[in-house]
Length: 386
Image (cartoon, rainbow, N blue to C red):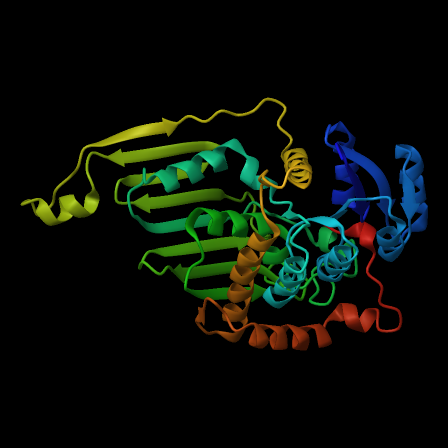
């Protein structure tokens, strides 16, 4: 096999976007599209000269694909990935891997039964040059021992009209959460990719603070890591103009990443060593103000890079993907812990108690407006995700 035959499940915003570049990847051959909107599936199949399917089960049984790209609403990720693995298909899943840690674990457990298959996630933010540079600086110890991190991500402004565009949007039954699950999966992934998971979170979560919705649109979280360092994660869909500012405070200085610029105010020596050795009561240290350079790849398409590397990993078991499927559970657990902490007004340890979270979510789903509106014929449109 010199090409991976791909099928895309879900032809909404993201699935439709993937269609525009998937055929540009030499290692990939698009052979099928699937959507429960039959007209849309047939139209796209004709446009791209591929087979059309109106159900995932039909696609899985067709034998015309080696791998599937799952781009449907969050709750459908788990059952579709599990069935794909059972049919011997490689899986590349859109973010987040699942709504809950327990559902993510089900996907991981099924994949473990099929070690010959590859399981990847669409965490394309890891491919951005600035993020790769920050990761390299952290791993190299350039910042010294990290003492504190702050990430303010409030540039996710959304209008009421956005939330009103689908009855499933911003509901516990339709999406399983708000800004954390819908807008912030990449930020949550990058946070744990950079710093690892904290061992404790304490969140303050606002439900419908800025919008007429039943899920969170404002979150302020404090977290503590195993080594005693601390972090803050702040996000909202109700602030304008918003901010996207990552600050890392280490024993060798402070890094700030904002407006695509990495600035590092580097100390001449380790702050802890200086603090304990200087005879002065109000000392100052020599610092260098540095704008850290990084190489931006011309015409870089992040999603395309993820699909390309996934296909290469299918063709060559030794090749690495941008993000292994098993890694996705970390950001989901981080987000779940934030929500549980805020809604229950408690500190939450990580690893967290998944049974308690699932019980809370089921209660929220039971009272969800989406359930009440769609009680007679609830059907999530695969073509309208994201």
